[in-house]
Structure formats: structure tokens, C-alpha cells
Amino acid sequence: MKNKSPIFVLFVTILIDLLGFGLIIPILPIFASELNAGPFVIGLIAGIYSLMNFLFAPFWGTLSDKIGRRPVMLISIFLTMLSYVFFSFTHSLTFLIISRIFSGMGSANISAAQAYIADITTPENRAKNMGIIGAGFGLGFIFGPPVGGYLKSISGAGSVDIVGYFAAGLCAFNLLLAYLYLPESLKVKNPDKAFSFKPIANILHELKKPVISELISINFLFVVAFSMMSLTAAILWAEHYGFDTKQIGYVFMYIGLTAAIVQGGLVGKLSKAFGEKKLLLYGSLLMAFGLATLPFAPTDMFFFQFISLGLISLANGCLTPSINSLISQAANPGEQGQALGTNQSLGSLARVVGPVLGGFLFNLHYTLPYLLGAVLMIGAYGVSKLLKNQNTTDANMVTEIN
Image (cartoon, rainbow, N blue to C red):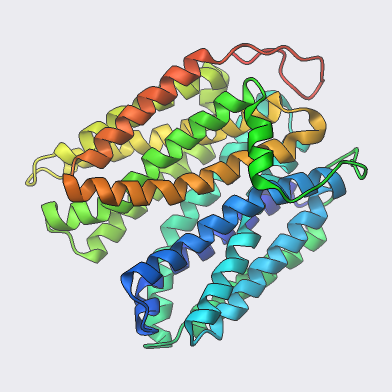
């Protein structure tokens, strides 16, 4: 195993991050209510994870530019493991909040992982490798929720000890794997780089840069649109199609499986065939069409929704790795982690905005979250059209984004 690919190790890292997140999704509301939390408090606890992602994604990315990718990955994996140790001993809302804070901090390491990929891959293969990491997201959502639900049933009411032990054990394995087989990828560290923990200032700094600002904006619109769908779809299927929680879980499994196949197997070929900028255009249109048609399938013909969901998954597979690849190419070599971290940070903020906005609109009319999501994706298409070609002399960047 001495020749274990760093891409494989990063894939396992992201998979475990998202598997841990998926484990918690179905049990957090139930467990928090067992600890006497009301709906508002449950919503706040759920939002802590994304808030920590928002704060720490640029922190890890910028720190990795300064001290290297390897130490950042090891520290963040350890924090994630620590979060699940806290989670396993949770019998109060205080411990639950602490565990979600540490989990959100540690799992924000995706920016450092993406910067690692940018260090070790050529521009023409970057979208493909970003897609392989993206496949870890899909697989985490496929297997996480059913495993989490099963382990919670074993733990019993008012306890999540087995869930926490299982997730902490996965992180311990991941930490060992990364320690043994993840070498440093950053050839030139920047120890003199000015460093401060100012996420808002970092976001404003990156938004002033041409190309990067457009790409970050596209990602924000996409994540808001997608997260509105993610929150409200379960309610839509339950209220309008009579699905139970088991059936809804299978539908989400279909979404995750499709996204994993696209990002893990097809995105590299699509990128080479069409180019990453065109994938942004096609992905935005596919997402808009998929969202706009999703709530209009006849109640006795639900299979039509699988077409819409397939388009959404295909669009997700086109957009996510292309955006990350183009950002890594547009950023200065010494600031790739910072740029990717800022993108992840705003994406986390979008995951806070999207569900709140989606829930509000769903109460007005069940079609509104999807229609607004389609409008946002048309806006993302317009921003994609505005992207300017960018020339560069750096050997690790493409000469033209087109």
C-alpha cells in the first residue's frame, strides 16, 4: 500500500466526512426532540454545522496555503473524530451543540482537499479528479442515512452512542490512512503569507477578482436552488404523492447514486468533450429544467419525477467539479486554497439560506421553491455567459477558460 494514490486517500476523507453528515441527517431531529428541544432549537442546531463550514472552509484553505495541505488535513480529520466522540457521549443539548460545532469545523476541510488536487493534477485532468472527490459526496448520502437510522435504533431512545462510536471509528481509520499515505503536495509553502481569521473579509477580497467572483456567484446560486429542493422535496413527496419515510429515503438514494456515477465516471469525459465552461452552461440549463418540472408530475405518474431528478443529478455532476476546477485555474498558485475555501464558505452559507427560503416559499405554494430555483439557475446561466477568457503564463493553469 506504499503506492496508495493521494486521490484515493482524499476520496476516503471526503466520503467519511459526508458519510458522517449523512448518518446524522435522519436522526438529528428525532434525537434533539428526545432531549426536549423544540422545532426552533432543532433548526438552530442543524444550522450550526453549515455555519461552522461557512467560517472554517476559507480558514483551512488559507492555512493550507501557508503551512501545507497535509497538516491541515490531519488536524481537520482529528477534529471530526473528536466531534463524534462528543456525539457518542451526548445526553444533553449542550454536548449535542459542541459535537456539531467540532463536526462542522473539521468537515470544512474540503477546500484543502480541493487545493491538494489542484497541486497534483494537470489542468486537463483537474475536473475529472474533482469529480472523483465529488463522487464521495454522493456515496456519503447514499449510505449515510440508512446506516444512521439503523444504528440509532440499536442505541435506543435518548442515546446515540453507537452512532458516535461508529463514526469516530471511521475517522480514526481515515486519520491513520492519511498519516501513512498522504504526502505533502504543496511544493512551495508560503510561511510569510499574512494570515487572519476574517471570513467576511476573505469573501469580499475574492469577490473583487474577475472570473473567480463569477464562479463563486454561480456556485452560490446553484447551492441555494439545490438546497431549496433538498429540504422541500421530502415534504412534497409525503404530502402530494403519499410516500412514507422509507420510500423517500430510496428516492434520495437514487439522487445520490446518480450524482456519484456522473461525478465519478462521466464528468472527465464530458469535460474533455465540451470543456468546463460549456459544462457550466449546460449544467445550469439542465438544473433549471429539472427543478421547474419536478413538482408538476401527476400524482399517479411519479416516475416522471425520476426524469427531473436525473437531470438535476446530471447538472450537479457538471457544475460542481467544473466550478472548482475553474476556480483553481483562475487563482494565483499561492492562493488556490484560499479561493476554493471562500467558494466552499459561501456554499455553506447558501445551505443556510436555501432551506429557510425554501420552507417559507413552500408554505405559500408547494411549487414556488422549485420555480424560484429554476429562475436562479437561469441567472447562473447568464453569469456563466459573462465569464471572460483568461490567459495565464503559469504552467499549472490553462491558457484559456473556454
